[in-house]
Length: 193
Image (cartoon, rainbow, N blue to C red; front, top):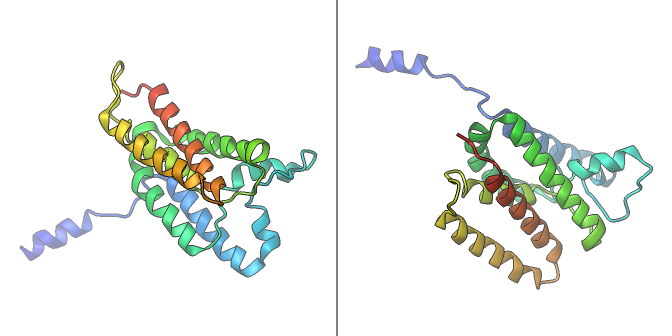
């Protein structure tokens, strides 16, 4: 029995199983650590705001980098728990290139909404989290069907966010809604074998 356990333990190795999700997670942690050490000027690079300077190249990077910056460790760990739970499953299903594209499109759509509609600064990966939640509910989607799990999740999450939008901090809820819409579109738009 001891020889069998020893043999089994040698067959396990740690793998970088979801490169996009794991790289995103590590970048978020490094940025959170660096932001604490370097201060607001560094953290501002990871925030998108309506006062975007369209003639500055770094402003274009903020359209995507805002998902890497977080207001604190609680904000970061809350987002990363969902990303690490759902992300690897979806990255395996859709592939790393598609997952990276879905992250980038969701980040861009959320940033543009902040700039042109909501007029408030934003940082964090909450939009990505909601994209993953809705996309995950469509993982077994078949043409011509709408999964009841998707309907229930959409109703619960969108309903919660719309009600939360009535509160003074409505911008984060609308970013969540945009992320959920992106996840829904990716799920219904992709037929994966």
